[in-house]
Picture 1: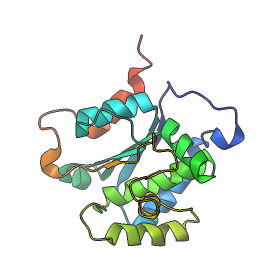
Picture 2 (picture 1 turned 45 degrees about the vertical axis):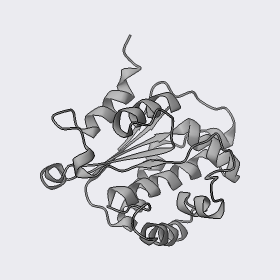
Picture 3 (picture 1 turned 90 degrees about the vertical axis):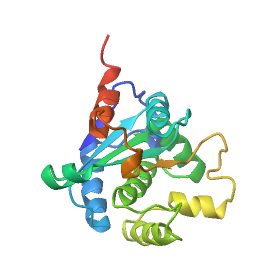
Length: 198
């Protein structure tokens, strides 16, 4: 499911336009199948401001980022067939796509694939290259350019062409998740509708 934050500003430039939700949903299904990730995945396309709020709330980092991954709780995975949620900053994706020389739609797909791998349990910070190898393989099969991990490796200390554009992915170990609070799906939905309220 693809959700668009109502606060997103349209970009008139062809390379900066958000692809149709139907196009992104088709890619999500294709990528999810390639990753072998079962269960529903929600993708929130949002603003830097909203993703900064989520990053601060769930990771304690007060800055915008490109993609956050919110794996579903084990019980929700089984009972409700949920895999988890992704939040993607369209503003950051637009900047990263421009820096890499490809359209916004391609960058959103790169971020979706990266986030799906995190939902599937991969963690490039601890898995000794396992996620990087899998991302490279899937990226090639899905016809995508360099992934996030490859960009970071090719430019050590500088994850993107623009140093002011952060590249970070949030994954949550079970004990990192807030206890007795709303689910991450609720938070992502709340973030997507919060701006619509007066």
